[in-house]
Amino acid sequence: NAGVMQNPRHLVRRRGQEARLRCSPMKGHSHVYWYRQLPEEGLKFMVYLQKENIIDESGMPKERFSAEFPKEGPSILRIQQVVRGDSAAYFCASSQQGWSNQPQHFGDGTRLSIL
Amino acid sequence: AQSVAQPEDQVNVAEGNPLTVKCTYSVSGNPYLFWYVQYPNRGLQFLLKYITGDNLVKGSYGFEAEFNKSQTSFHLKKPSALVSDSALYFCAVRDSASKIIFGSGTRLSIRP
Image (cartoon, rainbow over all chains, first blue to last red; front, side, top):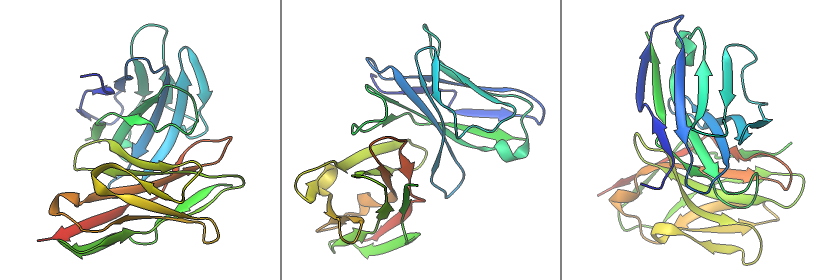
């Protein structure tokens, strides 16, 4: 499967624990975007990364959330000390170029549930 | 600031009838416009885009969209709906220098 791969598909955490969400972009894509989707709502941009660089993190909450896209390996979205309000579907997308007229390719998401 | 609006939360259409899902936008420069579809428990799938050129854009699964600059709209259309078209549809917009903004989505329900 050459598409965007996200894992895990479902993640359950208790309040106060850490959540790590992984995203492997499509082959040949070096630009990764993370979005959050609440039930019955649209996608909210969180962060845009290129290999080893955060390009735009204007949608990231100021605390507890961080993202990285190392030279080797998948992009990671990390949520520390999770709270009930973090429950959502988190989608990763990738593209060959940065913000451009090319469409983004999405993974199937990680559904995070906080107990 | 750029924005995109999908005024209808839900659209209901009988199978075989034409469908329209509405989208209006606001950008400071020339718009790049996209439509995506989302099936349950899946990510968004690209349907079509408008960058420049013909105002009528054809995309996947028989969908098309019409760019109307004067009305700042980019409505999604299909001449004959299928039950399998039932899904959540998102309009998205970006201008030449910034991120993509997604609409709140429209749930399309096609009854047999």
